[in-house]
Length: 502
Image: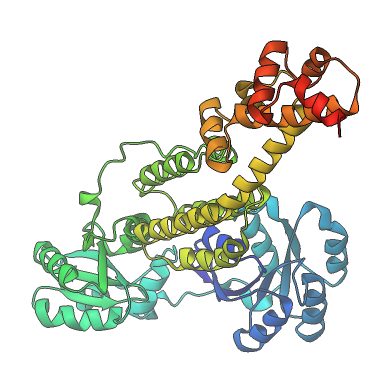
């Protein structure tokens, strides 16, 4: 069998979502790598290199403080044995070309970032690192139980001594027990606690993130874990199916336990999650109708937009086979897009812009779908506050524009419906809106503007009263005279004579 040392990888990018995406694209341990650190710029990366001693650096090209181009140059000067993979956008090839002169192994375009591209670049880097070359190892028979389990999990075909397995694990059946620890506690302390209660029936073997359980019948263990999980909220469990062939441990780990640990995110209230209790997925996890959501937001139908969003989230949260990173990314994208959209609509989004990074971090650290939904509800509450605080400003701005429009177009045959259509209002809404934000109704205000202009014309021009009535927007001369007397207390002819006598 051939084995090699795990490749240690350092990720450098100023965007949290990009770093998280890279981390979740691969099962790093299964592929023979481990992520030893993250940095948001080249300066932070150089500090981590001293402590983590990575084999490979995956770095963005454009970053604040120290960019990827300078980082590559410094790394190749100080640590020529470290291989560098560059992340770039389409328009940054001149920078990428300069890094190749410094000896980078490969580059990946960010818009095409995926597992296949990352693996291709990593394997190219491994070929240039002597310490990571595959080495022959024919000493399987001398491996410890821990080494056998670790290599089975990594996907290797391991030859082992059956007697050694039988002496270590006396019972016929096996299962894998995954443990999620929230707050205080550890898998090791859980093992001690379980052995205290069921040690005569089961043998527990601690691995990095799970327990290998050996026993004959696991029904008593299932009952105990359900009761224990309900009374001790620090622990949540997933349990694989039972298997009898020890060599299947790696397949069970990857094909069952790893999936259940992902599903656990969507079932925080279930103490022990197994395949048998998983519900059927009734609704398709359809794509979010972003166009509808955006359209409703732009039309200021905010509650309709939020209802559409929450309905989608409810359906999506029942699709437990969805990748947790993909699920969290959806919420991060919603928060980002809503903040940008409100900013483009001229809302005051300074506080939203400041708090969105805290939301990104909290979503990334969330232990359950419920916790992420609570963060979304909290964000929507902040959005409502932002909208309401800007409401008076927009209403004052709209009424000012409305009054200016009437002043500029008073001579035209204006109607409430035509003005409402011009400002994209419902006529009945405009009528009540106008009354609530002005001392006069629409018709009263329009008549006052027209009579004020008619008064000026009666003094300044020698046009007839009939002509003046048409000039200020009245098609009916008698109606004009009636309205004029209502506002001034005089008929148009009386008003003209009185003003001329002064």
